[in-house]
Length: 327
Image (cartoon, rainbow, N blue to C red; front, side, top):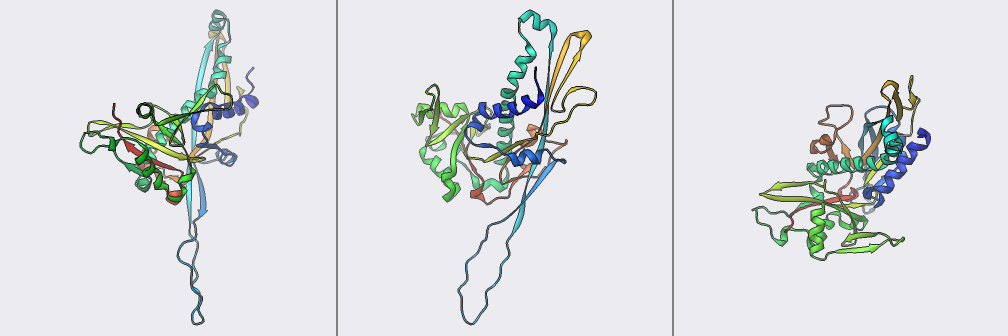
């Protein structure tokens, strides 16, 4: 039996365990965002006070202090509404000797982990194309079609990219890259392997940052050669909140988030999994400048017009570097 009240929290927890973006700490499962996702509307407005700026004042016996005001602005997050459905046939159960619907249920967490990673990579593409993020990205890729070591990721230009965070660079803890970039770093013997506590796996790192490999990381043809985007992250750079609100389906079986149906004459069972959640880069506002539906597609997440930085640059916990590789 797949019980919604047990299954849905399990999927959220398991998703956080199987995804490297989650396990590395880049994505933070935030109960506050879960509460916000359970509310109505399309977007969540998150006002915040800006830091105090300017010089202090010298006290004199001839003048008065000049008062200042604290500035305020707001971050904004879009609420995502996603779903998928799976069906099985009674005959498949008897021919295979196992319950395919139960197997589907066991695989759902891994499935959503992959879908969230696809969303994240789309967001990364859009975020680093936004003009407001220009101070958080460097481009060392070739400008004439000829790739040299200066156009590739190495220890020196990694330090330059990290310096974009200024004195907040110590907060960076992980680096996401395409597998081709990882392969090029392996050839240069620039990757370290660190055993984890159970001694059955290893965590790879580059210049002290945990490596996350994803072949969906942006790679585009520029000057006739591939240009890759590699991103350095700090812990909690992305917030995730999955709505826990769930209601029974009227006239059906299960709940809104996990609904079941059966076509008896066809011997077919159907499971529908709906999710309402926030997946938001902290400090980078969703503008929704180009969005056709009630929530964005991955293609719309990848549009730079939909993002603008509202936090101080060093408080946005990510920096990017465009570069080439030498095959």
